[in-house]
Length: 132
Image (cartoon, rainbow, N blue to C red; front, side, top):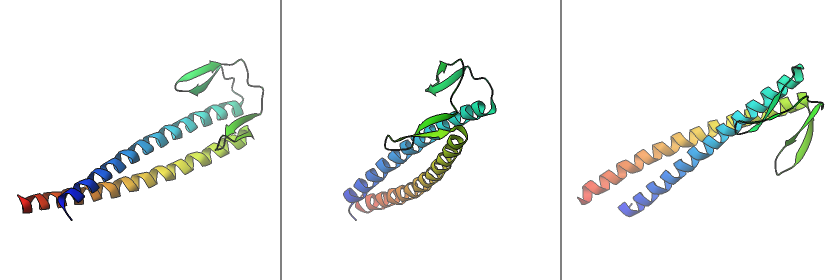
């Protein structure tokens, strides 16, 4: 393989690695958000009086009481579904578990990509040494 081809492939893998890291970070943030919502719903379920509910980004709204026994969750593709509190907690736990699996998958892809980058870096050195 020519040096130019190797360098192009290396740069493509670098971009892939950056995209993987961004995707993993977004997934971790979503997982944390789900955990926070789950905790809030567990508080509601336990009967504790909640004065504030997080609406995301460390922003809260003050409430006097929560009178509903259900919440509405976007289950994907902007489809809203009504859940009883317990069912919502279970749904969110399942979502969190799926995100954990996805994060692990991204971690594996990161390791593979980093290995491929090391191999290409060695190839670049060899080709430069042959030409130099």
